[in-house]
Length: 472
Figure 1 (tube, rainbow, N blue to C red):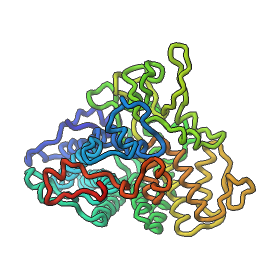
Figure 2 (cartoon, rainbow, N blue to C red):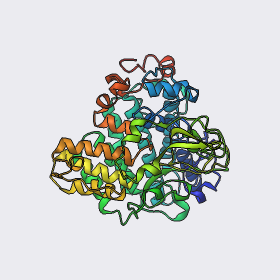
Figure 3 (cartoon, rainbow, N blue to C red):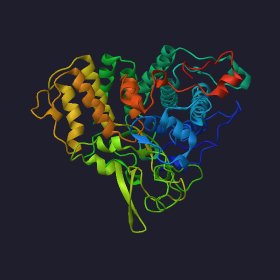
Figure 4 (tube, rainbow, N blue to C red):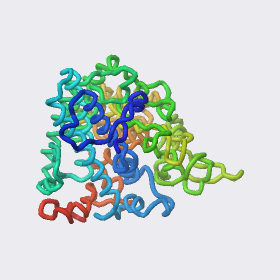
């Protein structure tokens, strides 16, 4: 069944599941339903419902599995002992390719449909943005992956695809996002909130260029987004606590979110239950089972500077059960009262404006360190909102002094860690900056583990085309 990916009004339209009939796609409404299925794929267990916070945070030093009952495969990802038969690898691979197939259907089937040309261009651009997002996840997780840009109607045709070079995958991602930037609006009406915007395409394109170390291109793209923040109706919210929770979905700082809605079969989000400690009963989440899948590490708790307002919003270190205080870390960004087990209204934020400002600062520094230059301004905007003093080139307080390019890199790494904690960014940040082994080596991280293993099931069904990553 297709899941849904846009605001509540859009959700209420009861989209159909993906149609196989080549005769189905005849009208703009048909294409809208098909596009909704692409957004819905982001809700799959192998995408933002579960896998991407497992990879983005649990794989890093941000969170851990403290109770083995949370799941052996999750624990293996946490401990760097995951192998090719781990279900996280297979579910992530499968869910992303299911979403890519849905995107390809929209891109291919919309061409002959008689409809408004501007709307056709926009729907195509939305599908290409979503395809780019899914391929960006795949290439960062697995490296070389099959590049499928057409609809596979016959399963046998899938056997012709091997692993494409990383450069080819990134070239497609960039091309898709550039088309999305050209055709998407900065804003939508209320009924279409949640769709991909020009701001989302620019932000993701900037992150892609930053990952590729194309720093000049990253600066150009991110500067365009920052310069047009007013047009895009984007800002840093005055209070960090106003970013999270069901009541704050799709706020003025959020650029792109995966939409969830409780009370509709398969549409609710699981995070309130997933992140509550096992054994906490109703103390942390009042409905459903606490699963203990993303527990903040002691190292993460200690990462916040004294007085950082983000800490109390992001995590707690104890809860009260039956009148007794239990010492146990847990994530609080996604707290709420689910309608049922694993059925909340919390969205998952993929990209927000603070992330863009920190990426912009990082790219500026990589192009050339400037003492107290513009990069410091963007870094300090984020720090000021957190209630922290600004950092500067020659600050007499050592913790606030950033005297050179290397120090600025570490300042950005630290700020991104606490600003974006538990939002699925830490692992990808450490891989992008080539710091993963240095930071995570004491936890078991080895060089070849920068990539996840290719699912053994994919190798077994297509051994002539699909090979394993080195080291696994």
